[in-house]
Length: 261
Length: 379
Image 1 (tube, helix red, strand yellow):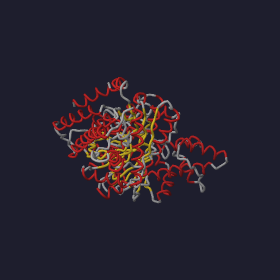
Image 2 (cartoon, helix red, strand yellow; image 1 turned 90 degrees about the vertical axis):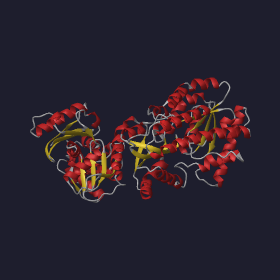
Image 3 (cartoon, rainbow over the protein chains, first blue to last red; image 1 turned 60 degrees about the vertical axis):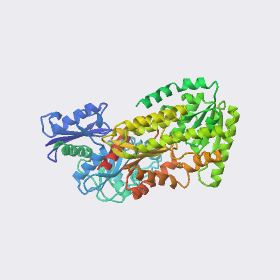
Image 4 (cartoon, rainbow over the protein chains, first blue to last red; image 1 turned 90 degrees about the horizontal axis):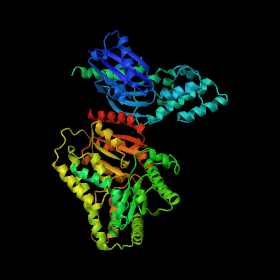
């Protein structure tokens, strides 16, 4: 059985091809200006990665997720990214009970049961604090090539700067002021991580963070953020391989359950 | 339904009709919240209309010249409509009555007095505690209102006229109550959106015409086959549900949810109780409008309303509760943090919180949250 999951998020498009519960191909690319083009391209790249010379029409079932899930014409079903992240994380780490997903434009905290079903969840409101976008803006100001590259630098700091604002724009101002005061770059970067982690912790305060806790989404590639989340939640976070494709994987798993019907 | 079509047509020509009626009758505009006894306006041959329009983010920009952003968007909308004249009901009202229920309404009344002094207004306070002294205070407030309306319209409010008006409004409340109870089974053809739209229309329409419409609607609904798929039964509650703020209801319906009962402080007419027509009518009005109705979220203690929600959830056998409050409505925001545990303990059902600032950008994340919440209930 050959199925696919497509996750069109705010910043990146992801696709996973699943054959009999095994990932045989995946792809990630920027969304760009047209979600339909992004969906077609990322699907083509995932098929290529799976060494398949077929089109998406040849697959048994396709599920789309993410912000643009309703716009993917070739998907037979849609599912929310929260449900998909729960399914995907549970598939990768079956002992998952709590998930923090930090994506491009939003972050989520999800409680799951032993089957990977969502019990409770929360999402950030229309604010970029504690999201990938927040980290990208800060990486740009602090002249680090990518948000992921900031992680190891943050881990070098023993004295993270205190950044009190949770608003991306105001936090940017704070960083500029601290930079002018001569604070070390590694302490500034650590401060940015601490501020984002504390924002996510506050958002998830109504949920039970029980082990195993799993960290997914593009920001999970940042090793510093993992550490700062662990400090806030006082628990270890496991990061699955390719944390960015967990939503698409969950969608593919849902596709698999529908393909046989 | 034919009743709704007839009502739409009445509302379309309502402003033209009111402009003609204005030559002989006074139009009394009043702010939302359910503390203005319409009976008093009707008893002096005036026409009550409630300002209930909101849901459009554009009007908030107009309000930005008068009030800061960190303020309930419904009341910011009212400030925007009042000062810009973009809600014609503000323009047509001869007198604006403001029962002050909380700080948001107080700021609206300040704006009214300061920026639009040409508009005549009458303000009275509504206490936040239900006790003897508070009842007395509210009672005195509506006595002052009665006097103002008599002077303003030049028409004395006799006991006979007031009793007739109360009977008319009781009939309207009774019909809303009956329609609401018809939805208890969960398979009724009456949608929440229709019910809420009927409520909103009742704040603007001619009272006797509205009663005819409600009777007609009830009959039509009774004759319509029940839904074959009833969906996830939901209790929908919050601070305000404004006329044209239907985004959340649409998403819930499209996602397979079925709202079968609502509770809102602003936007839904308190319809569970009738006003007694025996004895002192002014005291009866005070008792009914202040004591008997379920209080809003800003009352203390807030337990009366929360217990009422628990009772509704049980009586209507709902599968979940969607709590929809507007941004910066602090009393509701605070309750939304601790009420899910209370509700779960008492009923076993989950609650989900949505917050809005009347922004179109909210649609996508709201849909994701609502779909996920309904999915977790279905399982």
